[in-house]
Length: 355
Image (tube, rainbow, N blue to C red; front, top):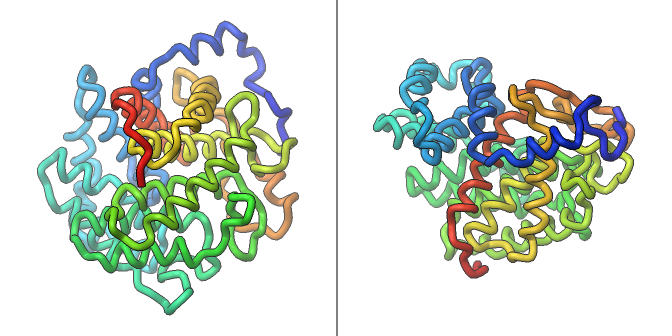
């Protein structure tokens, strides 16, 4: 589905766009938290990211009721690892493991270490296949999704357990993938040589997750940071005037895609806040936030979110993926993370860039 390059919903006036942009990240976060993060069925990353987002928002938004008790009750049945990994996760589905991304946050907030133990358990289920190969259960084809799924789980698993092998597995997955191209953009996978928007979002956010937890003395830190910097430089040059990134990053007539912009925005905001990325990227971030804020309505509906997409064998496959409007779990949770990262950046004095 190819949308006109600068399309917003029919009937949305310039005044309405101005009003949406004027909302603060906390206000947009409240809208998104009301719409997303209220279920963990199915146990999949789209639900887990939104739950994590609600917990993160609660740390910043002290004027709203705390969701900690509600979320604790919602996920209580997962506190037993045997229950948490009984179904799809038990056969090794990375997106199910990443559904537990909230475990460390809820453990701290609720004072219940069992939820952190779930992440340690999930991280322990990643095992090397061999030199140069993706670890199980990641795809042997090195899909960009796995950069995020593994980054979210193995990074936290390392932080919680201190098991350096978890970080080494994660670093090898990223460095061995060889799906980043000379232009800085990422293929969807080795067998899908297309610069899919959300695929690049998965890569950016996954590397950001990795760097968040990776020790400064780890031998892979500088190479992964270099990968992220090259990607961000490329994406800066591919950004639409609206601030959005496209369904196919380097195909100007493909539609402006919501989720990719949120995920890349998260990585940008965190990298600027923690000093990994150069401050010259701040305007790129500001444009991305402007574009996203225009595309979130007051009910948490979003505009232009690519439907679920496995690796495809043609450019036309990616161009024709449906663009979803309205409530969408895949996009709502990422938009909530983006709002939170923007607010964190606004509250933090800018550090000097460092590695």
